[in-house]
Image 1 (cartoon, rainbow, N blue to C red):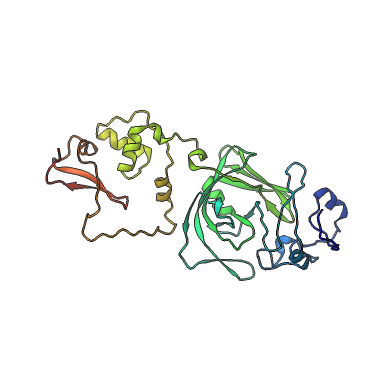
Image 2 (tube, one colour):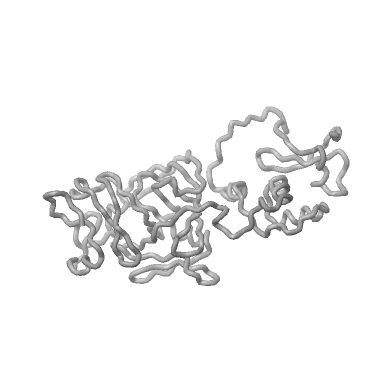
Amino acid sequence: MFREAGESWPVIIPNQELSQTAPPTKSCQICGKNGHIALDCWNRYNQEYQTQPQAHASQMYHHNNASGDATMLATPSIVVDPLWYPDSGASHHITHDDSTLSTKNTYTGSDKVNIGNGTGLNIHHVGHSYLHCPKFSKTVILNNLLHVPSITKKLLSVSQFARDNHVFFEFYPNFCTVKTQGTRETVLQGQLRGGLYVFPPMHKVQPALAFSAEKSSSHPRFTLWHPRLGHPSPRILKVALRNSHIPCNNFPDSVLSDSYCMGKAHELPFINSNSEYHTPLQLVFSDVTAQFSMGLGPNSLPGTGRFKSETGCSGIKNLPKKRS
């Protein structure tokens, strides 16, 4: 236990000591008042609120899942909390640390995150993240993850998390678990601390390591045709190539690429582009030299070729003359 010289107020006490010294009445860990717990405190998400001891002293808190002890280093104005708090009332995941996001885009909208006291917090970035808890093998995805620097806690939207990862939550008096819908495998397990359920810190992983899908780079022909045809699903790509009599054996059954993730993120704001189009089909590119007719099949008309623009749209254009 750490305290400033001359100070007599208590700081964070390990659970074993707390169970022996805590009074039987409810005491809020946020405002220090009796009669309610942190879960019901009006200042639960108010970053600007600080009690007198918090404004004049540093705190050290160490968390250990095995013993229940914990350490957290903090300054009087900045409190770094690596834990995740599941919130059934949140529509989006929220983090104060932008390094948590695997991909992020600058938020240019006017919406804000409203907290209990009516204050609106500014959103700086929006994106998604792939996280892994060292205690469990499964990697989870957080879609619609908002970067809000002024918030002090990392919030996990229960509904969003359950929908994106196909899991369900089980809440018990002293802990909670997250399990997969099919196999009921435990994905996460949290503890009850100060009246709130918390999950342990999770580490960000790269998308290529997040899933057991084969890397498309090991299939040169797949890598060639997958972006040419607008990043379709592997099943659709196989059908298209077989109809065009192009070998597609040993193609992966699933793939995860940056373009695929961006295509699925249809609710995110568009990325600003400086490209300008003054005439139709001005910005068109295609390999129309050696293999331009392969993507059209043996029954295609002569003098036609496939093109793809930066917008991700594919099409067919009449060519006045085939290049040699």
